Image (tube, rainbow, N blue to C red; front, side, top):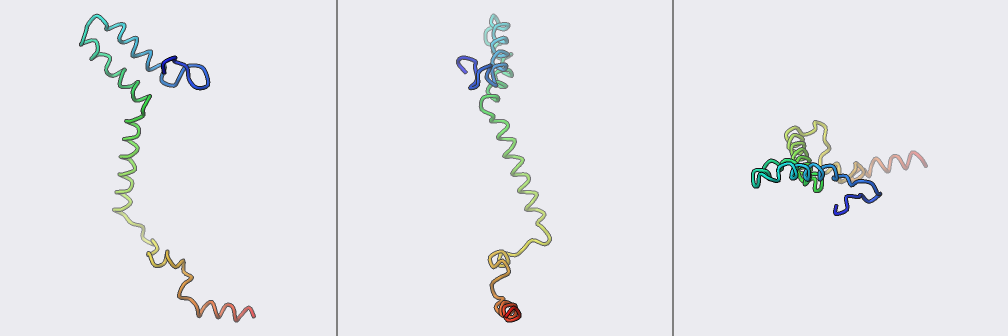
Length: 104
């Protein structure tokens, strides 16, 4: 971000947010600490653009809520663990023998 140029040339994705922060600091520079407080939302937007922490947190919360809702309402016809393990093929020797005998 030091130069303001992105990987493919042109401005970086967060350059406009950085310009807002600088503009805010220029306008509010004479107010000291109160000026910095006025620029906090712009600085927060710039950091979010850089690091995507709020977006990642929101995504994790949505995934957790989805998992919780899915656990609260299990599927009606969900296969049991032994059905998944055997894939319906184990323990059916008689049927397999009958199919093979019919083909011969």
